[in-house]
Length: 399
Image (cartoon, rainbow, N blue to C red):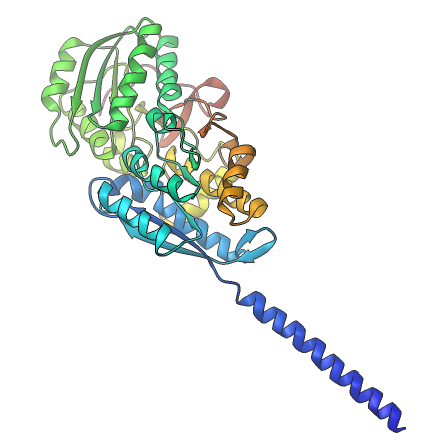
């Protein structure tokens, strides 16, 4: 009898110990440290307009969705995501200094990129120096890729395919002459360098070519000169404020060529809001919309629900795709940054804009594209296999 009671007490004690171990294990699991992800982004200054449409909202939405699903899968272990974001004030020096701090003092687990070609050009070498993979959704720069930085990946289409796409579309529509304005910075200079030979190869003559500085407030004299030359197409290698500027000032002077193309910002809801009934037929840099895939539709709807505004139809899709790539790579390789870099470099990933594979740091899976505003949506019109609608040509008159 005493033996039986002892066995019973032993069983109870053992059960308590086992339960305690499970409780301790659960507590340990619950105390897994968050994955700390650092970045600097333009919240103020001239780059804020693009950064706060195409990138930071996507970072916030992604982290929220990941945490709601239990956390980021790190080789089978779910860990919450903690974002550490700072304002770079649209200053290259501030961005570089902030990333240095994040990687050396704060020792974050991962980083996300800044906005824009120039910022990425400055920060990518720092990331590679410290061995942090960086997937740039707004870096359009052949020079940056030519640096062959082992930890940098450009998910956005680069100047040659993007300028080649607009040249192909113009040629298919019988365009013979074009006028070009471009931002006098890395983005504009690389675009014009890719555009000129692409147009020449198609027999399209550039009748006017003008550069302008960051922060320009008036381009009407340039536009009046261009109007006098009566080109078939107007092509602007522009940033968001300038895209709106050239559109409004072209409307004011009744400059309405057969093709009106402006680059960054045309894909923004802001452009539609500002231009109101004058978006129809305007072309620009775009690569996707909610019709592109079921995942793209789900992302589009979640973005609208979270921020009460639409994501842009170009870089926002690439920003989300870059986060999908990072998430899939971390699930496979964990947080060892060298292993993570090798996984990104050598794996094909499923994203909302299609399958993506990098070659020498460049996304070679997505071709150059052109989109156009049609009845309130920014439709992909070129190349034909990716089109969500046929092109409107010529552009309707401004209203």
